[in-house]
Length: 248
Picture 1 (cartoon, one colour):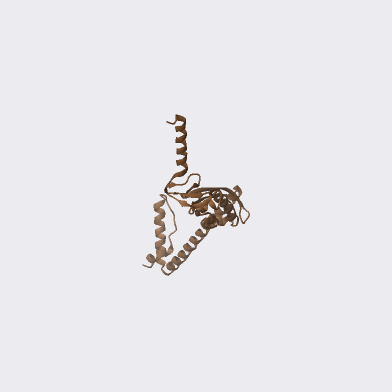
Picture 2 (tube, helix red, strand yellow; picture 1 turned 120 degrees about the horizontal axis):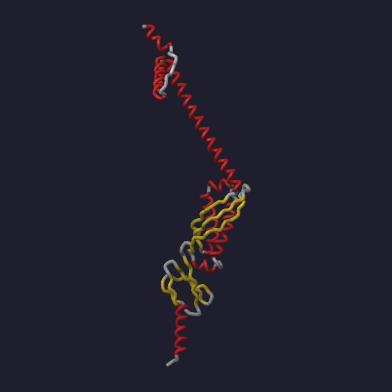
Protein backbone atom coordinates (compact mmCIF):
# COMPACT_ATOMS: atom_id res chain seq x y z
CA UNK A 1 0.00 0.00 0.00
CA UNK A 2 1.37 3.36 -1.04
CA UNK A 3 1.90 5.99 1.61
CA UNK A 4 -0.48 8.95 1.87
CA UNK A 5 1.88 11.53 0.24
CA UNK A 6 2.20 9.25 -2.79
CA UNK A 7 -1.61 9.05 -3.13
CA UNK A 8 -1.82 12.80 -2.95
CA UNK A 9 0.78 13.18 -5.69
CA UNK A 10 -1.07 10.61 -7.81
CA UNK A 11 -4.39 12.44 -7.44
CA UNK A 12 -2.79 15.77 -8.30
CA UNK A 13 -1.18 14.23 -11.38
CA UNK A 14 -4.48 12.71 -12.54
CA UNK A 15 -6.34 16.00 -12.04
CA UNK A 16 -3.67 17.90 -13.95
CA UNK A 17 -3.79 15.31 -16.73
CA UNK A 18 -7.57 15.56 -17.00
CA UNK A 19 -7.46 19.34 -16.92
CA UNK A 20 -5.03 19.43 -19.83
CA UNK A 21 -6.80 16.78 -21.90
CA UNK A 22 -10.53 17.22 -21.28
CA UNK A 23 -12.40 20.41 -22.25
CA UNK A 24 -16.09 21.28 -22.28
CA UNK A 25 -16.90 24.04 -24.76
CA UNK A 26 -20.17 25.95 -24.60
CA UNK A 27 -22.42 26.44 -27.62
CA UNK A 28 -20.85 29.82 -28.43
CA UNK A 29 -17.25 28.62 -27.96
CA UNK A 30 -14.83 26.95 -30.34
CA UNK A 31 -11.48 25.37 -29.64
CA UNK A 32 -8.51 25.98 -31.94
CA UNK A 33 -6.24 22.94 -31.54
CA UNK A 34 -2.49 22.94 -32.17
CA UNK A 35 -0.48 19.72 -32.39
CA UNK A 36 3.19 20.27 -31.65
CA UNK A 37 2.79 23.89 -32.68
CA UNK A 38 0.95 23.20 -35.94
CA UNK A 39 -2.70 24.04 -36.50
CA UNK A 40 -4.78 20.87 -36.16
CA UNK A 41 -8.29 22.23 -36.78
CA UNK A 42 -11.20 23.74 -34.90
CA UNK A 43 -13.34 21.70 -32.52
CA UNK A 44 -16.47 22.19 -30.47
CA UNK A 45 -18.87 22.73 -28.95
CA UNK A 46 -19.27 19.94 -26.41
CA UNK A 47 -16.78 17.55 -24.84
CA UNK A 48 -13.33 17.81 -26.42
CA UNK A 49 -10.42 15.47 -25.75
CA UNK A 50 -6.86 16.44 -26.58
CA UNK A 51 -3.59 14.59 -26.20
CA UNK A 52 -1.73 15.94 -23.15
CA UNK A 53 1.63 17.62 -23.82
CA UNK A 54 1.12 17.08 -27.55
CA UNK A 55 -1.97 19.09 -28.37
CA UNK A 56 -2.96 22.52 -27.08
CA UNK A 57 -6.45 24.01 -27.20
CA UNK A 58 -7.22 27.74 -27.34
CA UNK A 59 -10.77 28.84 -26.56
CA UNK A 60 -12.44 31.41 -28.84
CA UNK A 61 -15.70 33.14 -27.96
CA UNK A 62 -17.92 33.66 -31.01
CA UNK A 63 -20.52 35.91 -29.38
CA UNK A 64 -20.93 39.51 -30.51
CA UNK A 65 -18.49 41.79 -28.71
CA UNK A 66 -19.50 45.34 -27.78
CA UNK A 67 -16.39 47.53 -27.77
CA UNK A 68 -16.34 51.17 -26.78
CA UNK A 69 -14.07 53.30 -28.98
CA UNK A 70 -12.41 55.91 -26.73
CA UNK A 71 -12.89 59.60 -27.42
CA UNK A 72 -10.71 60.76 -30.29
CA UNK A 73 -9.48 64.30 -31.03
CA UNK A 74 -10.38 65.08 -34.63
CA UNK A 75 -9.87 68.08 -36.89
CA UNK A 76 -12.59 68.12 -39.54
CA UNK A 77 -12.15 69.04 -43.18
CA UNK A 78 -13.29 72.60 -42.45
CA UNK A 79 -10.70 72.93 -39.62
CA UNK A 80 -12.98 72.50 -36.60
CA UNK A 81 -11.53 70.70 -33.56
CA UNK A 82 -13.99 68.18 -32.11
CA UNK A 83 -14.01 65.10 -29.89
CA UNK A 84 -15.75 61.97 -31.17
CA UNK A 85 -16.43 58.59 -29.60
CA UNK A 86 -18.27 55.54 -30.92
CA UNK A 87 -19.24 51.96 -30.18
CA UNK A 88 -18.23 48.92 -32.25
CA UNK A 89 -20.04 45.57 -32.60
CA UNK A 90 -18.15 42.58 -34.02
CA UNK A 91 -17.78 38.81 -33.70
CA UNK A 92 -15.33 36.09 -34.62
CA UNK A 93 -16.55 34.07 -37.60
CA UNK A 94 -13.34 32.11 -38.29
CA UNK A 95 -11.66 31.11 -35.00
CA UNK A 96 -8.54 29.68 -36.63
CA UNK A 97 -7.73 32.96 -38.41
CA UNK A 98 -8.46 34.98 -35.27
CA UNK A 99 -5.75 33.04 -33.40
CA UNK A 100 -3.21 32.42 -36.17
CA UNK A 101 -3.34 35.61 -38.27
CA UNK A 102 -3.15 38.19 -35.48
CA UNK A 103 -1.58 38.16 -32.03
CA UNK A 104 -4.53 39.70 -30.15
CA UNK A 105 -7.60 40.27 -32.31
CA UNK A 106 -9.40 42.27 -29.60
CA UNK A 107 -6.55 44.77 -29.21
CA UNK A 108 -5.93 44.92 -32.96
CA UNK A 109 -9.59 45.60 -33.72
CA UNK A 110 -9.72 48.32 -31.08
CA UNK A 111 -6.67 50.12 -32.46
CA UNK A 112 -7.95 49.83 -36.02
CA UNK A 113 -11.33 51.24 -34.99
CA UNK A 114 -9.71 54.28 -33.33
CA UNK A 115 -7.56 55.17 -36.32
CA UNK A 116 -10.43 54.65 -38.76
CA UNK A 117 -12.74 56.84 -36.69
CA UNK A 118 -10.20 59.69 -36.73
CA UNK A 119 -9.52 59.27 -40.44
CA UNK A 120 -13.15 59.20 -41.61
CA UNK A 121 -14.27 62.08 -39.38
CA UNK A 122 -11.24 64.11 -40.44
CA UNK A 123 -12.23 63.77 -44.10
CA UNK A 124 -15.75 65.15 -43.53
CA UNK A 125 -17.01 68.62 -42.76
CA UNK A 126 -18.72 69.39 -39.47
CA UNK A 127 -22.16 69.83 -41.04
CA UNK A 128 -21.87 66.39 -42.67
CA UNK A 129 -20.89 64.78 -39.36
CA UNK A 130 -23.94 66.25 -37.68
CA UNK A 131 -26.50 65.74 -40.45
CA UNK A 132 -25.23 62.57 -42.17
CA UNK A 133 -24.24 60.43 -39.21
CA UNK A 134 -25.78 57.29 -40.67
CA UNK A 135 -23.59 57.51 -43.77
CA UNK A 136 -20.53 58.12 -41.57
CA UNK A 137 -21.37 55.02 -39.51
CA UNK A 138 -21.71 52.86 -42.63
CA UNK A 139 -18.42 54.09 -44.07
CA UNK A 140 -16.50 53.41 -40.85
CA UNK A 141 -18.05 49.95 -40.58
CA UNK A 142 -17.13 49.04 -44.16
CA UNK A 143 -13.51 50.17 -43.75
CA UNK A 144 -12.96 48.29 -40.47
CA UNK A 145 -14.73 45.18 -41.74
CA UNK A 146 -12.60 45.02 -44.89
CA UNK A 147 -9.40 45.20 -42.84
CA UNK A 148 -10.43 42.69 -40.17
CA UNK A 149 -11.67 40.11 -42.66
CA UNK A 150 -8.20 38.43 -42.92
CA UNK A 151 -8.34 37.99 -39.13
CA UNK A 152 -11.66 36.13 -39.28
CA UNK A 153 -13.47 39.02 -37.56
CA UNK A 154 -16.81 40.34 -38.87
CA UNK A 155 -17.73 43.94 -37.95
CA UNK A 156 -21.51 44.24 -37.97
CA UNK A 157 -22.21 47.77 -36.72
CA UNK A 158 -20.45 51.02 -35.85
CA UNK A 159 -22.36 53.83 -34.15
CA UNK A 160 -20.96 57.32 -33.46
CA UNK A 161 -22.25 58.07 -29.95
CA UNK A 162 -21.28 61.65 -29.25
CA UNK A 163 -19.67 64.60 -31.02
CA UNK A 164 -18.31 67.15 -28.55
CA UNK A 165 -18.06 70.66 -30.04
CA UNK A 166 -16.07 73.62 -28.65
CA UNK A 167 -18.07 76.19 -26.66
CA UNK A 168 -17.49 78.86 -29.30
CA UNK A 169 -18.86 76.58 -32.01
CA UNK A 170 -21.89 75.68 -29.90
CA UNK A 171 -22.73 79.36 -29.38
CA UNK A 172 -22.26 80.09 -33.08
CA UNK A 173 -24.53 77.20 -34.05
CA UNK A 174 -27.16 78.32 -31.52
CA UNK A 175 -27.14 81.81 -33.04
CA UNK A 176 -27.38 80.35 -36.52
CA UNK A 177 -30.35 78.17 -35.51
CA UNK A 178 -32.08 81.15 -33.88
CA UNK A 179 -31.56 83.28 -36.98
CA UNK A 180 -32.95 80.48 -39.14
CA UNK A 181 -36.05 80.23 -36.95
CA UNK A 182 -36.60 84.00 -37.15
CA UNK A 183 -36.21 83.89 -40.92
CA UNK A 184 -38.82 81.15 -41.23
CA UNK A 185 -41.18 83.02 -38.89
CA UNK A 186 -40.90 86.18 -40.97
CA UNK A 187 -41.48 84.25 -44.18
CA UNK A 188 -44.59 82.59 -42.72
CA UNK A 189 -45.87 85.95 -41.47
CA UNK A 190 -45.27 87.58 -44.86
CA UNK A 191 -47.04 84.73 -46.63
CA UNK A 192 -49.99 85.09 -44.25
CA UNK A 193 -50.22 88.84 -44.86
CA UNK A 194 -50.00 88.28 -48.61
CA UNK A 195 -52.84 85.77 -48.53
CA UNK A 196 -54.91 88.06 -46.27
CA UNK A 197 -54.36 91.00 -48.62
CA UNK A 198 -55.34 88.84 -51.58
CA UNK A 199 -58.56 87.79 -49.85
CA UNK A 200 -59.35 91.38 -48.80
CA UNK A 201 -58.85 92.57 -52.37
CA UNK A 202 -61.24 89.92 -53.63
CA UNK A 203 -63.78 90.87 -50.94
CA UNK A 204 -63.51 94.57 -51.82
CA UNK A 205 -64.20 93.74 -55.45
CA UNK A 206 -67.34 91.85 -54.47
CA UNK A 207 -68.55 94.64 -52.17
CA UNK A 208 -67.94 97.23 -54.88
CA UNK A 209 -70.46 95.49 -57.12
CA UNK A 210 -72.99 95.11 -54.27
CA UNK A 211 -73.23 98.30 -52.12
CA UNK A 212 -75.65 96.64 -49.74
CA UNK A 213 -72.94 94.26 -48.54
CA UNK A 214 -70.91 97.23 -47.27
CA UNK A 215 -73.84 98.40 -45.16
CA UNK A 216 -74.38 94.90 -43.76
CA UNK A 217 -70.70 94.66 -42.90
CA UNK A 218 -70.90 98.02 -41.17
CA UNK A 219 -73.84 96.92 -39.05
CA UNK A 220 -72.12 93.62 -38.20
CA UNK A 221 -69.07 95.50 -36.97
CA UNK A 222 -71.23 97.70 -34.76
CA UNK A 223 -72.87 94.64 -33.28
CA UNK A 224 -69.50 93.17 -32.31
CA UNK A 225 -68.39 96.46 -30.74
CA UNK A 226 -71.56 96.72 -28.69
CA UNK A 227 -71.21 93.11 -27.49
CA UNK A 228 -67.56 93.29 -26.44
CA UNK A 229 -67.52 96.77 -24.85
CA UNK A 230 -70.18 97.82 -22.34
CA UNK A 231 -69.96 101.55 -22.97
CA UNK A 232 -71.60 104.35 -24.95
CA UNK A 233 -70.33 104.55 -28.51
CA UNK A 234 -70.82 107.47 -30.89
CA UNK A 235 -70.49 106.60 -34.54
CA UNK A 236 -71.39 108.38 -37.78
CA UNK A 237 -74.39 107.09 -39.65
CA UNK A 238 -73.54 106.50 -43.31
CA UNK A 239 -75.59 108.47 -45.77
CA UNK A 240 -75.80 105.41 -48.01
CA UNK A 241 -77.67 103.61 -45.29
CA UNK A 242 -80.38 106.33 -45.24
CA UNK A 243 -80.79 106.68 -49.01
CA UNK A 244 -83.28 103.87 -49.16
CA UNK A 245 -85.54 105.54 -46.58
CA UNK A 246 -85.14 108.98 -48.21
CA UNK A 247 -86.23 107.62 -51.59
CA UNK A 248 -89.26 106.04 -50.04
